[in-house]
Image (cartoon, rainbow, N blue to C red):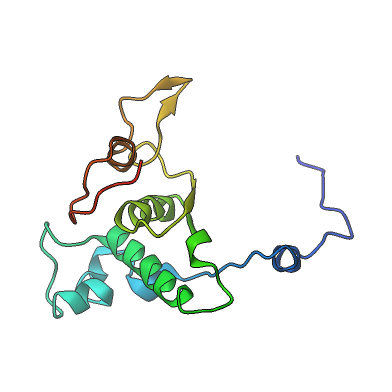
Length: 155
């Protein structure tokens, strides 16, 4: 059993971030696209496909979430209180995979914090050696190839 606890006078993380000039924006993934197959004729995918189910060559949910992150950045670029050249994207698990897609598809993101995105996405090492399961997004970023949308990946 873990018996450690947070100090009684734990500072407010939001206040600390703001005092140091940091900001943050959150979004609910389901505001952009539901994370289930039943929602693929709704959300941004349904809007783009005019309510018809997507084909296998159309966007999936990760690309839809990444698109949503780009639209948030569109807004932040209009806010005079934000230095949009210093905006990052983050995500955990499937959200981490979506953050990788956002960085590949939108070079405006300065940095990404990818948490536990798994072997099918951002895992590049296993026991200190390069993994044969390293994800295609990382491979594309590191090689400078173009994405499926024709954009050149940053190195």
